[in-house]
Amino acid sequence: MARKPANPKPARTKTAKSNADPALTHIGASGEARMVDVSDKPATERLAVAEGRVVMTRATLDLIVSGNARKGDVLGTARIAGIMAAKRTSELIPLCHPLALSKVTVEIEPDAKLPGCLVRASVKVTGPTGVEMEALTAVSVACLTIYDMIKAVERGVRIEAIHLVEKLGGKSGHYRA
Picture 1 (cartoon, one colour):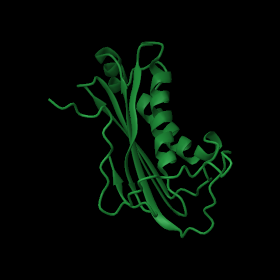
Picture 2 (cartoon, one colour; picture 1 turned 90 degrees about the vertical axis):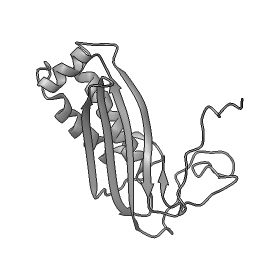
Picture 3 (cartoon, one colour; picture 1 turned 180 degrees about the vertical axis):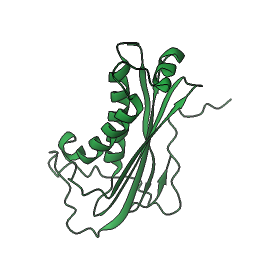
């Protein structure tokens, strides 16, 4: 019986370009890290969606849902933290361009089956470069904020599966995980 690859490549939609040997754009000719020059790229509408999850015990999730966490509104605080993080991505990730984001949403859904919270961020901009890092940063910081607000109750909380779900716009086209 043939084994499936451990990490299958994500499917790309028909609009995405396929490169057999993609170049690392943040590496210069002599191997140095560099910021990509996007000055010749047209400003187009771009969207990125990322997700992650915070896994905890059912008792801790119940505490969050009931609104009885000692530090206050866990989900509301995490939502705001994620939005703020998306706006400051270029200050956190060294080679990211500062962008004038047009929209950031962070949705957090309690999920009794995990048990835990599903975190999803959507970021939009009209500009010469994409917003994947902003969406991933929003999810990461929202997840970390949930952890921070409940760590006194449960230190074994796990942050898992932060990944890009979808990207629209730009030269590389549409990507969906």
